[in-house]
Length: 583
Image (cartoon, rainbow, N blue to C red):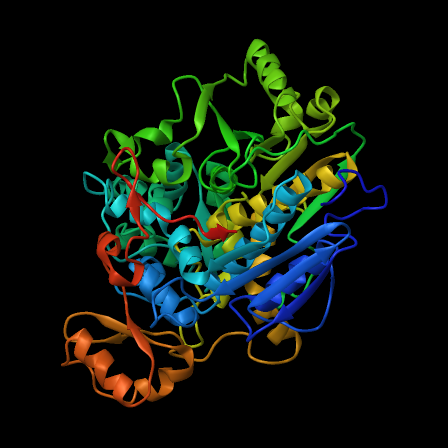
């Protein structure tokens, strides 16, 4: 068992070593990279199973596979097809589309590292975890959990699910994203450009809900309006209205930056372990979460799945997103996907008495996690330094948009970060116009990286006795997702995948997705007149692997590929399985 205080430890895995075996699993290279960044020595192998030990820890074996049970889900393409990722990503285009970046494998790699950190943390607290396993298909289900919950709700969507959405193109050919959370700024921007009033009114709701629906079918008149204005005029309209615009950057523009996806900054403390209750790795630990939208709430949700008690800070009257349709038993299905099981406490952070109460609550917690706007925590007296003064052993976690790494960056929201970092190129193959995905790719991956950073901070605290500040960001998530494409660009190779990459094939009653290795051969067969089952059977007779594409997320509940995996919570909302198994 590990000592709770190892004075020479600087990173959470200092003194530990990793050994890999087996064929490369999903995201094997990323797993190895993150374990090295966290301090572990490593061999050069990349396999589906990694054993971590040393520095007083017992051996912990971490295994990552493509699928938990489904035999025809064997690579990135088939995971995206089966879990509904293709369906959600393709909503803007009117049909399922594969993400050209390896999104499910990236998410599963982060989950694997989370499992390693959680298992080692449990050992350091007196537990006996020796094995952790996860799979890319469970990562995919977690990634679409909000969309799945909405599809299984008691009522329909509040906004139409139909093709359409940003980005926009100016008269001089600048492709850009638009962002505002204020309907007044939205209207002022479009009025400054001369858009019709009925189009302005009709466009706000689908634009506002695009984070939830992954599409934005607003009137064509809005696209036509910006096509008649040059970039300078559009920039002026944004500045005058309070909206923000960001041109789409290329992968080559972003380049390779040697920056980890999170930072850990220990500070002096006097923490000693109190031992772990039996059960999940984080049992007995308390996380105080002041999160909004997706990134921080998902990070806290993951920590809750690992056993932590999550106390969610909400404004007076409760989180307004609780009422966001569609609902299950009167509560937003999407909200439940990220926040079920959390205890809620209403705090008015504008009132000094409530801020004092929040500081007292933080003094009794192990983790304080938030994703407020830059500078807001310091303005409120709730920054790392203020809270650590009352609780030196606190793990203070900030999940931001830009991590203060890009001066002059626009608003740090999912789609703006996608636009600024070249994600729009990475997720679309060559031959298609670059466009950020309207699936919230970075909010989800950023939340997973935020949870990984918190686990690293907790393990470092356990080993050193020091509290830790941890920072993660959507920018870090974008860099992790686009790293393979940016490396290709740095080598002088085409950064984007070839035309037609991960494009599902239509059948008489649906779609099928071949594995990446079989896609070229499968495309040579005429399958359009065959039912999906027959098309799959025909490909198998030729030795080609494929799976059916999920187009109705509500059907996942009864999909034999996930038999028994998807349950329903106490409110009746669909709930995806925990992404890890511990032994």
